[in-house]
Image (cartoon, rainbow, N blue to C red; front, side, top):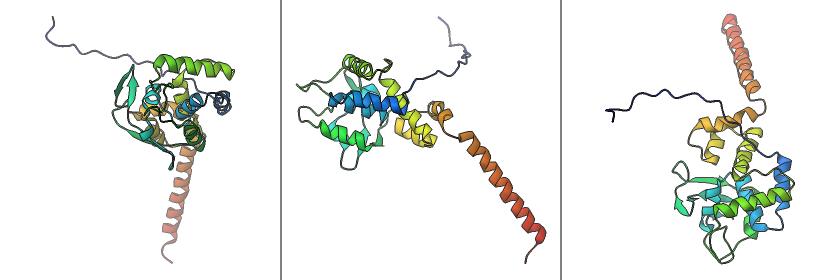
Length: 216
């Protein structure tokens, strides 16, 4: 036994790479699942709203306001146990029109859960993994998993120019450091930052010129 834990220096590791679908690949996946509407809706909830697999499993109809097109992520399912989402707090997400339409199309009364079997029993992690694998193969895509759809959500937001703080809030990232992994995809981010310096320099020169001229 030791009296106290020694100071341990942590090792620095390289940033992990992540996979995501292109816009065309995501559309192919959504279209491939059209014959299984519940799976199509689940794919959109992940790819268009960024929910984790456990959050999809725990999603309830009361969490949805399909009139206003919003979703509140209140809980997650971890191997059958319901708890708070990762990060410990709820988040509200505006839904895309196609996600709203897909969720309306599968509206049912057999359970408070959005995604469940015909008898109302919940889907499981095994169910989810088998389902996404089937849809990816049907779409002719590489077999990945649900988290790639979450990466796709964040990546597409960054590629469209969404601010890091907005992506962090929508995805429920605890740290902005996690969000920043996607920002290299933002179009012209570094160029726009340098442009701010150019505008500041031009403004500063104008002020200097006015001071030299003095009051009119």
